[in-house]
Amino acid sequence: DVKVTQSSRYLVKRTGEKVFLECVQDMDHENMFWYRQDPGLGLRLIYFSYDVKMKEKGDIPEGYSVSREKKERFSLILESASTNQTSMYLCASSSTGTRGFGSGTRLTVV
Amino acid sequence: QQQVKQSPQSLIVQKGGISIINCAYENTAFDYFPWYQQFPGKGPALLIAIRPDVSEKKEGRFTISFNKSAKQFSLHIMDSQPGDSATYFCAASPSGSARQLTFGSGTQLTVLP
Image (cartoon, rainbow over the protein chains, first blue to last red):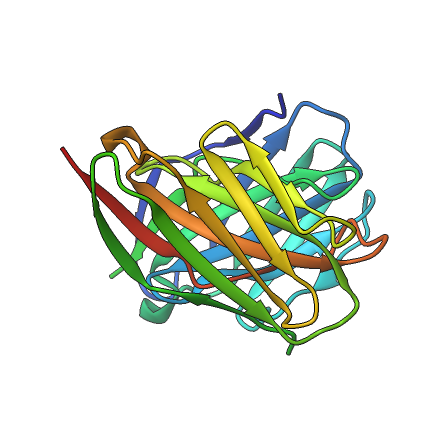
């Protein structure tokens, strides 16, 4: 089974803070993804990466950036957190299409 | 933006009943249709998936029905159990794409004991 580990289950940050969400996968997958999950909106893709140092914008990249320095690690960065970024963030990895997801980080921005 | 429309948003079923969740899509390039199950506090996990060369796929109590001409697919949970209570997401992706997977908005299923 794919194991995707997100470093924090819950985070509370202040408006304007720089926030790092970390994700590690142990399956040597090429592709890694960051999603945002909000009630009634499903999972929306923020960014994805198909190789080390490569990234592509998803559907809602505004206010976010990513970093992939090693194949197993994919970081989501909120440059200046805002209250509308309060959400559940899910990391995933895949090689052929099936996503393996982490358990999520619930971020609250106050 | 490519969309997958999912209904209903929430569903309450008695134990032993049949749960049915429906999804519809627009993009005819989609040819992989997975369903994910998510329990509270967990990430989504792949439940069952279908490709359009078949009209139905069954795994235990879970069945996907696929109607290519109508561009619709649905998840049927037979003999629903309280342990099936979770959020279910349909999704779709184009052929050969390991990256593009468009999710539906999710259905919160509650199975009453």
